[in-house]
Length: 354
Image (cartoon, rainbow, N blue to C red):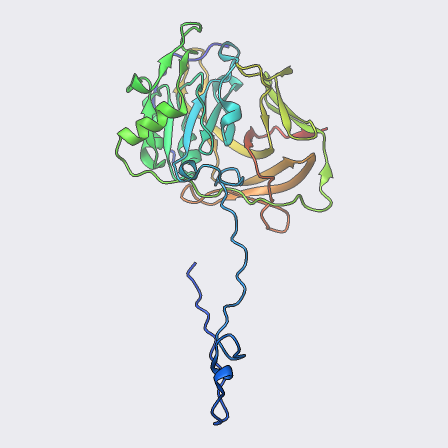
């Protein structure tokens, strides 16, 4: 299905501290101690520092993996909108992203948001236009840098209002992007982490690193074994993930999802969020309304990691706070350190384990 090139625009209202320890020397009996007793090495009452716990290794905030590049660990999140329709395939850079969100757009199709921080990617794309939900997704990353090809005023309005992100669009500042001569427009806009981080530096704006979004740790005892999951998004769009014994590989619309370098799209964790949506008054050339995907509130969630599935729910009372993924007892569901895909599955569709 072709992607919209223009829109009728009018969006509905969218709404440690340290603890000092001191050991006091033992009091005497009034008898003058010998020289040997006064020696610090011989005195049982000399101050002794207690054993210190081993320092917790530093980890990247979006993967939970040990830091190998301190500069990367402190840089802002870089989120990029990626085209996800037939003419845009194969894509580039997804397996270098720490976090990827799969999001419903007009016509029952999906578009991706790939977020980079711990790793670089020399080729990212094809890059496409923004959507209203982007503001809420990048806000929980402390904003950072948000790169996209362009957007109608109603589509980018929420990001301008409350994303806290530096917005970089090819339509308005093309120096940070390029077009591939081997692809047809509009599926031919590309960039790299080097260029887009340079854009952030050139802005001279203070950009901070993202918070740690997830909890990491062993899989819960008794978690249900699952070889994978199928995720319908609409009558004509679906994805699936299959456990390989070391990670998950992706299928889209019944075909293996492969990148430009020939590698299969893969991830360590899959977090499926059941979300609501409502149509906006932004209409494409085919008469399809942009959906406003809602990631504020709560809903069912499903986590897949290490060949098991854990059911739970997601909670986010406001766009000002990050989302939490909780189990039935209200505790965070731990992920395996590594990359994560967020599947924002629109209701009434539900995931099917296999």
